[in-house]
Image (cartoon, rainbow, N blue to C red; front, side):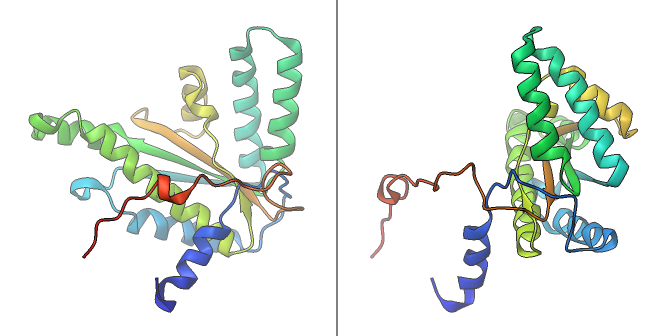
Length: 212
């Protein structure tokens, strides 16, 4: 690694999960919109499919998204009151308490269109779509970190079809937009994580190198 990539890797290293968000932002809503738009525009996609979609919500829209998620998420807990109380508190304090949320989706119309055009690769396009989704998520998350926000990656909309459908209805989205993740964000009021230092597995077990 050289000095040319050092700043990039500093940003990658500093991108952490924050669960102590405030309802404040270092950026205007217009600047946040520009950040999300640039990430989605330039995130690579297989065959240049450009199937990744994003929705930015702040203010009352952000609150309503998490209230809707809470309402339908509780229905998946089997009537366990203790679990319902814990989930309600966690969502309220760790996600809804933030300034806004970026919701990420993959458009099945594009994915299925490529599958129909190239049948031998039909089963690969959903996999490649998730690759693209992860790249877009990382770009947005890291950019928010650079701008002084804390954020985390959540998947409540994937827990049940009812939650996905409720968000689709709430935001008036096409039914072909399938949720891949949510990124709640805001200026953090404390350090990242949940109190413990991040532990890394030995890098030699994760990276193999063959060079001459």
